[in-house]
Image (tube, rainbow, N blue to C red):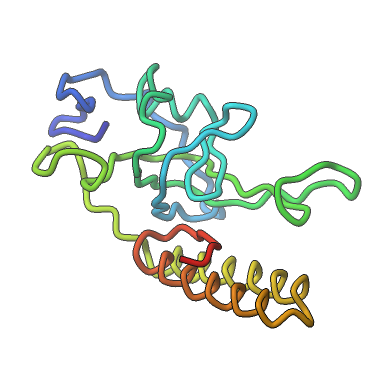
Length: 182
């Protein structure tokens, strides 16, 4: 779903829908919105997740419609505030004591590579330099962890190096870390 002229939204089928309600004005000190590109997936708790960041179900429904779960596996571009929630010391968290979140969503667009070419409601979803940098940092962290676990095993270290290179290439192409040797 993307913005159409006049503020209406077009759905993936091309039908016009009413624009989502206006968001309240953000305070001047609020974090800036950034583009975030990735594949729409679901967490175990059925929360929408895009390139490792969790978005609220309400935002998914607001921007992608009530059948947003049917878009699972498609690439999307989100314009939102990216924030890492820091967990309490004994809380269960996704990764290393933090939960990566997508908040204050301003738009969600389907990527042109997600379906048939030439559809006007789909957009180019090249990852931003900041997203590529975050992705490569995640690959580095995964690689360091892999190296530590494989210490002393030359075969394991070779596989870790291969996975790190593959992960960094994936960051350049799609902005999503995929730590696997291919």
